[in-house]
Image 1: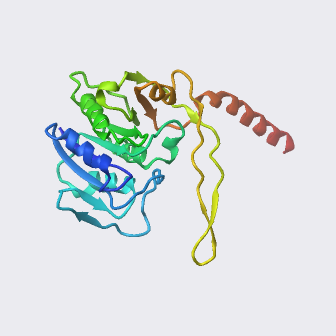
Image 2 (image 1 turned 135 degrees about the vertical axis):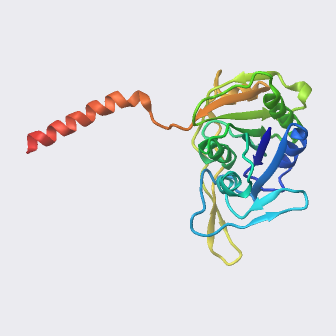
Image 3 (image 1 turned 180 degrees about the horizontal axis):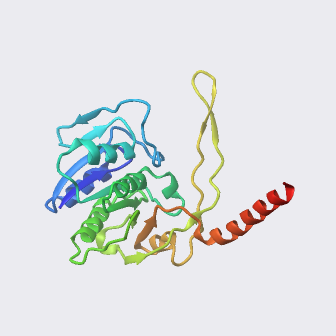
Length: 256
């Protein structure tokens, strides 16, 4: 098995290092990650300048770009041998519910999926204890399964792991995405030159966080496994929208 590892926290992130160490011996591992923290980068792709790739003594490669850039370059140019799958993480914080819209961790996985590879995004729901080894062990267990699970086209598996020792995990739960309440307000500050600046406010708490959601599973000590489909079409609205558009078109004819 040939596996591409990436993330959004940067090439020196402890989560990425733990993932690499935890998957050693499972296959041929290659690491291509941003040269710095790109949390919140979502699926941004750098198109206005060339990208620089650096190889480190560890064998890891870094890119002066986004997580999406990293996976795109790795799959489409840096290596001659193809990959079998992409694993993105281990993110230093949760990627639950609405988080996946902004997440560079999830974006790296979805870029792999766009390029035809099965992909997993994995995050540690950190409370400061930093049990990255638990999350790495979860990923290894998923990859070593004698019965590989296929999600289907344009889909990834979003995995969130409680920040506990392996022995304290309650198990696995298949979940849907919850959603967060409105984010906290922007935080104003004054820079040393006297100009006003703003920090983006903290994410809201789980609004839709009941049973069945990723929020609820993790709060109960379970690993949350959420299949995420990249098709963002609101299929349930197609019929009513067509009816509405038909009425618009009819009114255009009346006006003529």
